[in-house]
Length: 385
Image (tube, rainbow, N blue to C red; front, side, top):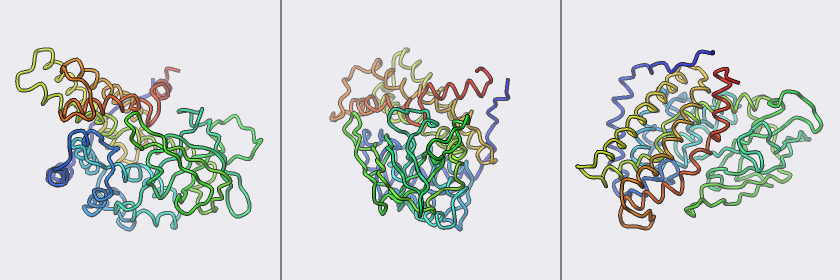
């Protein structure tokens, strides 16, 4: 069986020294934020907050200074992220670019493409990810959006769905097929490429909202119809898209956002239970807390591996799968412990937060890779299939 370990994350006194600074910042910045708003976690949107984080140097923390970064460690970045999520900070606008798009552009982008990195680090520029498609699900190797090589660049046709914040983003990382029509290959992962698309200044792109159960507009359908992208939009080498995407997924699947989406409901549950909970309630809270502590240990281990330049895609898939299970379990347990009807419009913090989390919970096992796909990755990584 292949080696499958979660080594202890390296010590980082600098990261722990940063923690109180972040908490002091959040105490002031989020003072007026309601519990149900804090429950939005990493889907919360606030341009002013993103800019304030940029001024603090808390976006693009690990990037080189020449590209707007601050050359801090992955573990320092981890501390900022977990404190933001635990406090319910609205980090949604800059989240994707900071987490994976920026590192991708740093690694394979051209000098011209890298010019957007300081804007991202300042909290001024946002990037969305064009991966999922209708009738494809989590099988990214089956994407049908095609970029055909033509004079002057690439002609793109196809549709992307579940594209978070495309309506607010200036750029998209587009994953599509560049192999010529009729090209045959036994390698399903060949002939795929990624592009940096300027959503504001490129004709032929239509963005339509997909509303969540709550009525919120986070997701979008993005349609490309005879969209001409310049050759300079290609990220890295043509045909390297699959390798690029799989490298990104370790960033996307391993962070604290994969087990803290329901965290504010847990906080409100503890408050609702009071200082003298029943034995069953105390046992449930202890169990959930121990699971969070374990997932945090695994997640920080992945951060340490990323800092060391490794590609812990297998470990990240496990963190994401176990984290989604916990995130979906918290609202179900909360319902059994407190006699309150979920009501997002309620003035009672617990009832409002419970309603919000329940409506979003079905998506937790879909975003970042469906549970079934993750378990196939884990099984293959362990040599079980």
